[in-house]
Amino acid sequence: MSAEVIYGNVLAEELREEMKQEVGELSKQNIHPKLVVVIIGEDPASMSYVKGKQKASEKVGVASDLIEMPESTSQQELLDLIEKLNLDDTVHGILVQLPVPDHIDDQLVIEAIDPKKDVDGFHPSNVGKMMTGQDTFYPCTPYGILVMLKRAEIELEGANVVIVGRSNLVGKPVGQLLLNEHATVTHCHSRTKDLRAHTKQADILIVAAGRADLISGEDIKDGAVVIDVGVNRVDGKLTGDVEFESAKERASYITPVPKGVGPMTITMLLHNTIKAAKQIHKAQ
Ligand SMILES: Nc1nc(=O)c2c([nH]1)NC[C@@H]1CN(c3ccc(C(=O)N[C@@H](CCC(=O)O)C(=O)O)cc3)C=[N+]21
Image (cartoon, rainbow, N blue to C red; front, side, top):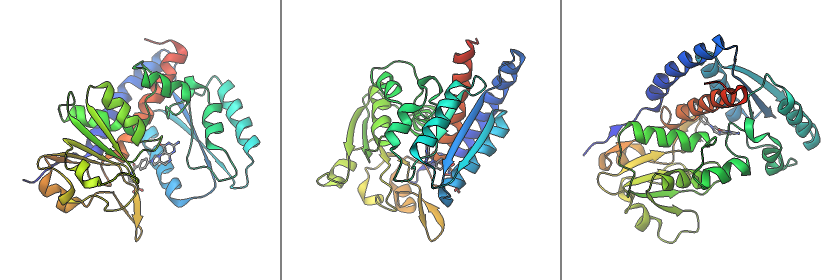
């Protein structure tokens, strides 16, 4: 078998076209969705994602401001900036690019963002809503994965989903979203005994461990759906957590890196920003 490749960039393009129409409609009601991205320090990888966000926003017609702060920014300065953005009625979405430098407590930063503007879906209030099956901002990468699976018409109800990685950004929330869709979810991580025994059982395998080539063809079941969330730089090239060529031979569907989950993450960020603007202005 050779898997069908799910190109996130193609789906992202379609969704962005739809969102562009919606932004056009909103502008007639004098609503202009605006995202502010805050980045601290000059990590080249972070800068590259942030540039992607700026470009996509422009295409969709979402205003996107970038605030670049030096590595030496104090925690209080950052919290003050967030407070100012919380109170600014023209700002609908606030994203602080993670990771932040070590001298800043990331959880404090996440909790400082007004949950109504928390387009990353990281605030405990929004995480709690997601966990209890309420409508809220879902974290962008998990939400992007859910949309990809649904668009490919992959059966989620009763599916054995195995997730490798348990971060607050991806592993934990993607499991929650798929549990809400009635999947049977197993979370694996660095302390899991016999990882392969688990991954081999997966109808849908989601790999978000941050280790290049952690998973290869021998680790997956014939006909599995493989979602690669890895973003590793190896010799300057972006690569996933899945050894693509061998996995592709076994899988029914597979996402590549790049052009897979990444572009969908950005798309769902714009979706959340539009949603925030509508909710703040109580638009239809
Ligand atoms: N508060 C916060 N929210 C985030 O959502 C967040 C974050 N911090 N910190 C970093 C991670 C990583 N992330 C990516 C988004 C898009 C691509 C993406 O579009 N990648 C392209 C290629 C980009 C390239 O070539 O560099 C692709 O996969 O095709 C990748 C990674 C969002 N993150």
